[in-house]
Amino acid sequence: MGSGTSHGIPVIGCSCPVCTSPDPKDKRMRASLYIEGDDGERVVIDTGPEFRLQALRAGISSLDAVFLTHAHADHTHGLDDIRSLSYKQEMPVYGNEKTLAEIKERFSYAFQNTQQGGGKPRIRLSPVSGPVQIGGLTLTPVPVKHGILDILGWKITGAVNKNSFAVYLTDTSFIPSPSLALIQSPEFLIVGGLRARPHETHFSFEQALSAGADIHARHVYLTHICHSHSHREITAICQRFQKMRNLRNLGFQNTVMEPGYDQMELVL
Ligand SMILES: [Zn+2]
Ligand SMILES: [Zn+2]
Ligand SMILES: [Zn+2]
Image 1 (spheres, rainbow, N blue to C red):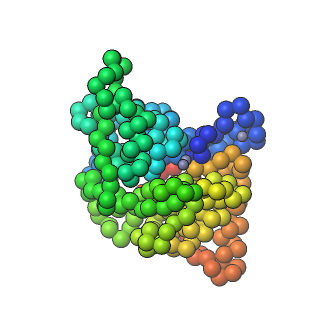
Image 2: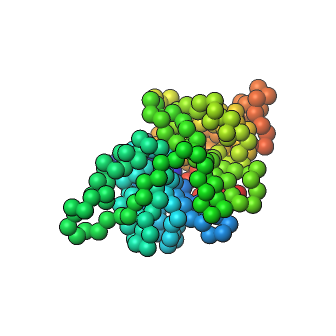
Image 3: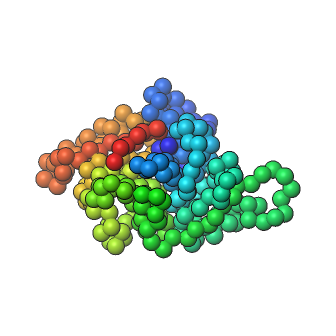
């Protein structure tokens, strides 16, 4: 539903060529993913500040669960807007213990009986210790490092073909080996690639693409992108990366590597 870094693009007050670009693919809301299962299961990964706008744009009218990668503002501060989706029943919100503890603190009003009026979301905090089943969909937590933070990526498997799965890893700077073993040969890897230059807590474009090649992903799409390069420029960077790997016989000729964009749709 979104493919931008924490600021979103355009960045407020910025007049750089990317923030003023007329290309719709250079407009990036905060990073998140909406998933529909074969039997109508509906879940989102992360609810950033534009969650309401993204949900309206994607035509979301109900949701079975919310999955969180971590508690940073750009991934969670739209969580209040699940209000209208949690009238009938509490919304299960899955994440690791630390993320959920922070949610309880940031959205304290939702867990207390002290607020007068104003409405609140009905949240059921659900710490994960293994794969989560939502109808025929399975979401398996993939522990990764975001700088010094322990956060979660998610492996997404449908009901029909268990061998074909997608992996969503945003805000990642390191994938530990038990997690690498869990995500070998995905059909889709949607992976945070912040910018060309290295960053302490995020993969660069090249690190993200290398991670995709190393796990033999058939398609690699970058997300959580900042305003340093346009969609067109990142497309060229991806093509150069593949050419280099192929020249050095490291690459997989059949791998697709591209920058993601808002409202991109993938069918698994
Ligand atoms: Zn982020
Ligand atoms: Zn800019
Ligand atoms: Zn983050």
